[in-house]
Length: 333
Image (cartoon, rainbow, N blue to C red; front, side, top):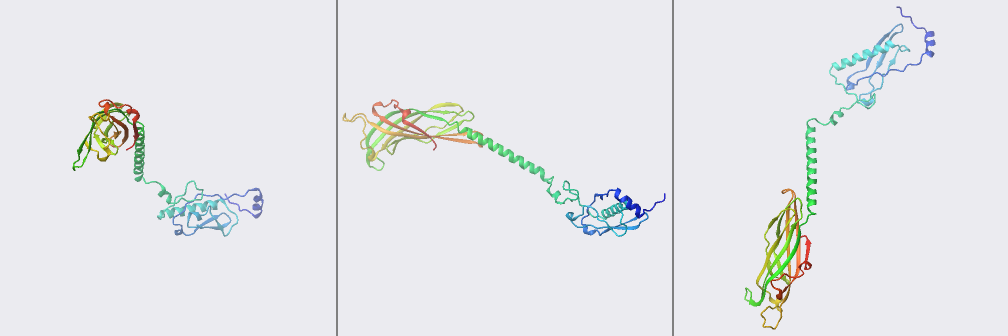
């Protein structure tokens, strides 16, 4: 079928009735580096209108400078034909494929950043390395386990502090008391005191999930600032939620008093003086250690006991009255 050429009247009559067609925005690829490709010249031939040359160039060498659509420069005809457009696209596609075959790498288009944006190679570097990712997960898991385990140990330690052992002095009995003259090791004459006492105390472990290893400092009996007697408590192990009564002997033999005991006396005194009453102080510290979770969690308790007593010569061998009111208990060393 013969192709009829369009006259100027036909073009003039069809132009108002036909709406202008917007140029189609085809998909495109960007070659890297862009500077390695010269301008692409597309030659197309149309029916009856002669040869028209379309020239297309890459506007820039970077993705940001890449054109959103083709710019065609026409040197001859003023009317665009569909065949010319399709032929230009085919020739341009062949040129791109020939460039890819020559070994020029393609640059990947960016996703989610618009139709005309080009993805950057740095996106690959932002992805985690497959070889390092498992080790990172292992490190995070180990850190989480240690944190939870440390928190659990801290809770155990804090809970153990609420179960302090119960200590109370049950009775104190002075067995003997005697004052006599003598000399110390250097030969200095002075009064000498001999006293013997028995201290009974009750110890109870109130812990529900730990046992206690109990020790103590020496039991010291003071007259003024002089130590006149001392005793030692045997170590023991106390199970949970249990108690016992501990007995400690406090003994002092011929302890020199020097000037502090000038007014002290004892029987027999030829009936001139009555029974002696000597104020003394008893002091000691109980130490309890709990191994809650082996060597990982250990809790220590200290109980200081201080009692103000009187040695009454008339009541030797009998419990001292009012021991419960005369003793004070404090936590700490």
